[in-house]
Image 1 (spheres, rainbow, N blue to C red):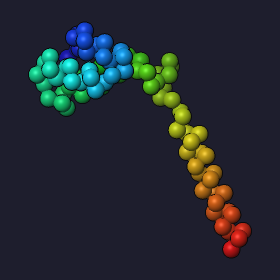
Image 2 (image 1 turned 90 degrees about the vertical axis):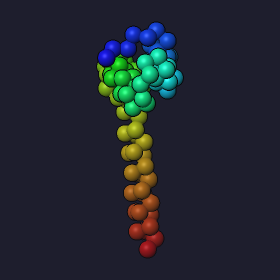
Image 3 (image 1 turned 45 degrees about the horizontal axis):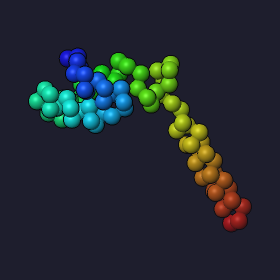
Length: 83
């Protein structure tokens, strides 16, 4: 089912998914799960703010995980040298 409600579309474009879900529930009289599913499906058709232009998710988590991993390795090596 396509979302055509202008207020819901405006909320989605503004990045306010929770508001969009509330508005969709009110306008269609559907439950939370259905509204969330429709919003998620619709957001898959457009470029969300949290995705890059090429459609791939940002890789900000990878450098962070690498840094955390290196901290653990460094800590264990430090403990090994002291022991």
